Picture 1 (spheres, rainbow, N blue to C red):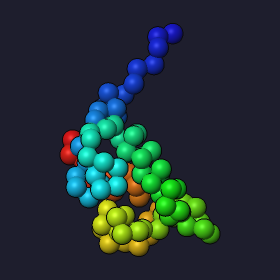
Picture 2: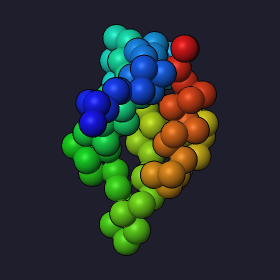
Picture 3: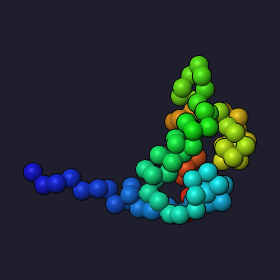
Picture 4: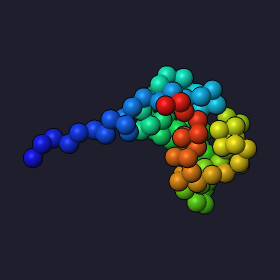
Length: 87
């Protein structure tokens, strides 16, 4: 059985725009790393909702990233990342 190949599209570095770069840095990274860095930021700043851990509360930086929404679900992160990166 051949070794599994990494999905090259999925692992391609993406350049964050200024709004996303304010949270994770400006260096181009794969989508998987963007998600990891966002979760590190969310957990470090205690932004997960206490009652429903799937919800993320926005601080000042995330409010800009979340297009003014005070809370999003973790399922919205993929769409948010897509809107804030250059391919």
